[in-house]
Length: 361
Image (cartoon, rainbow, N blue to C red):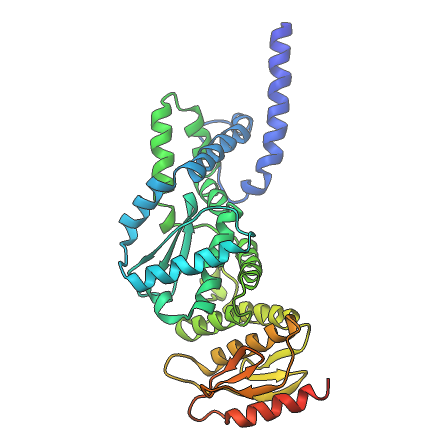
């Protein structure tokens, strides 16, 4: 064998080993095409996946305008001034903390389901159903959750994974690079219908979403409240048994998400504020009230929003005597804690309970 041939062989072995390490975790999920030997596929797999990933990263970083237009074409656009203003205001406020680095194109679509998504190009779309169901403290975490997907490039990872090793190799070895670009752009364009986020990525988006909203000054009870609303509307979104095997869960159980956000809210309050059984607001383990359902809010939702306001008081060290404001709402300092509804306990009773507990601290 010539020196040149030996060098080529050594290079091939190195590439093969690198590729093998790179794709071992993915091999269990994708059957390698039988058109070529396993050795040949492994030889090119690492390079091919890197090629595909590089293409999608480039599209993610520079293709926002085209991706936005394509996504709007697929979902439709909900042209409502109030909805657009809400999205713009929340986005600007979330960005103001400095934690979010990318620039997002966010728009409302007319779908009535409770949902939102982030796709390539840092494009986020919020369903009309979510806008109609949530107040701004709740909607903020939905948008922040999707922003985390964008910050961590989860769509790039997902669409690369969707291509699969076999197709990635075929695309890379194609003699027609225009055809390769056509295939990859088509996959990217259809990604919103076939999102591939992992359970770990969803937990990451929740956890960072909480940090984003609290850093921007939103109610720390809003995240749990938003999930309470979603659970009432959609259930726990969790499949068991055969259904789970056929269609695996890719989002955490909604109740688990509520519990996670509730724990974060309690930690934010330095351990003082809890919501017992998703219903009863407590300060240092002592019950304040169990809010009732109103026209726009479920009782559990109101409980987390009230608890979040109290959590902000403790987090910001604003503890003072509670009182009833001119508008009839309960306040601590300048922070409104809750506006009572019919069938709630009275504002005066809430004030007395809060102040009696504060005296014990």
